[in-house]
Image (cartoon, rainbow, N blue to C red; front, side, top):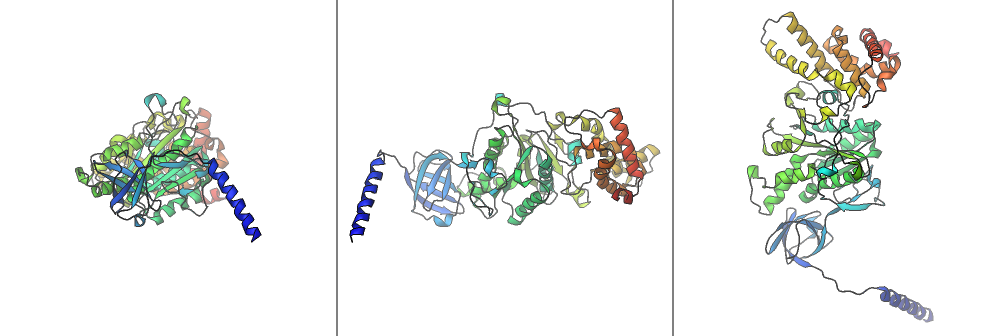
Length: 509
């Protein structure tokens, strides 16, 4: 009994000391009530001072964003399990906007829009936070886009080049290889200094797992970050995903890094926002989308830029993905995104089903910035490639009717078939700049004319190992390399001639 009394006295002394340390001061707390809840949204009353996009806290710790402010009621998108919220429950205003964790410790991890880990690697240590919504850099804070972002895909690097700090839309029907191009671009950064962030919006868990597995097998996962808004997550969390991913990317950009941000995809993002808006009784417009659907994407993609040295000198390159229906690029969301971005890579389903992969339609694809950033050594060899390929495609259609052609037209068609064979590329096999230069030189110098179009695929697969043995200087070319010197061009040409005439078994030896 004596020991118990002593313990109680010690506890009382400690409690009094802690109470004396508490600073008592008045605190204003806004408390409202949930009027109704369902389908990922809630209507709240009793919070007259709530601001737009303010973070609200419901009972059970579920968070939400105030997105629709009325005189008496507030529409809120939920960022968690609505099953823990009931009508009549208490909701508190925070006076703060939504924030997400940022920092180097996020690299190599998979998280949701609020920074909660989705992998099995435990909690994320030592992270600060930043607002998910931030203003885009001003004109004075931006610098010129001057460096290329190599994707390792010859059809893109040669004809639709992308610069670091550019926004290039990847657009096409479902199942035409849009995500494959983005993933290959991420894999190709394994030998560069570019950090990669993949934002998945409304994708199936199996699809996300395939992307993560591909990066882990072929890329540099320790320099990648995956921000996932799963298909079964609340629409509010899916809507917030690209903004959180952009904030995480900006942390690295402001510290001088170059970052590639893939957003897969903004069609599902717009659909999630439409769902939220219709549930909150906002007036529908074209294709039932609310009037501000253009703004939600423009304020996101405008954050991609190359910063001036005073702001850190880094760059954020955005590759948003958009899905079309039956090739209709004039639909509402695709036209919005085309007008926001600096160009688009259009994937044609007809080319895809003809096994021409990547199925890039060069007639509808354009890069409004990247041509000025293209590596000089690549630019000199690809200057006429787009025109030659376009001429071939038109002539090929013309000759399908059995029309007699002259010798010049026949040679143009034969050359075009070899261009098409060279541009065909397997997934998860991005090319080094030296390999791309070698293939373009082989086209321009007529080295491939002695090969049948079906033999070009084998030639492509052997270029890298062959050059490593016979012309290693070509593989050392980088984005700063000027046009090929006469000596290197001759040696590279000679090595390619030997490869074209050498049996496959010699290369294997």
